[in-house]
Amino acid sequence: MDPKISFFAFLFTLLLGVATSSTLISDGGLQSRGSIGRNLLQAKKSCTVDFEHANYTIITSKCKGPDYPVGMCCPAFKEFACPYADEIDDGTNDCASTMFTYIGLKGNYPEGLFASECREGKEGLACPAAAPDPTDDASTGHVTRSFFPPLILVSGFLLGFLFS
Image (tube, rainbow, N blue to C red; front, side, top):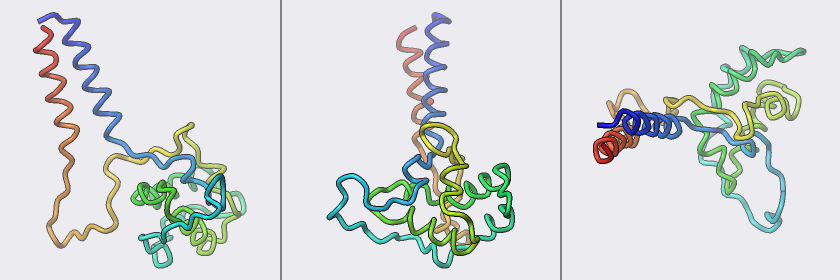
């Protein structure tokens, strides 16, 4: 087997695995969406997440004014928001605006604090791959696994053997 091809197959597999193993809260999800663009007559779906009764202690215990230190506020915001990244990023619902409304009410934060301060690049905030699902009940014994990363790994090795 040619070491150069094996290296590229390994690198391809590694990069593909990393790219598929994380979730992002997009830049658009970090902002409360009013009526922007062509959404004038389109009603948004109600958010399925109950942000009204969510536990905001994660944020309010770490992110305190009047300075609102970015080093404390942004990690706390990510810890709270990442489990809901898919819902927050869905532009067809009102989850982002609902979440930010309740964060503001529960923590008395200035409007736009997290959207303006918590940035990790053009794509938004990177959420850890193993963000806990708040709807999972540990007592049920249900285990959720993703078979996509192992599938990519096996595919990469097969490509390496095919081109050797």
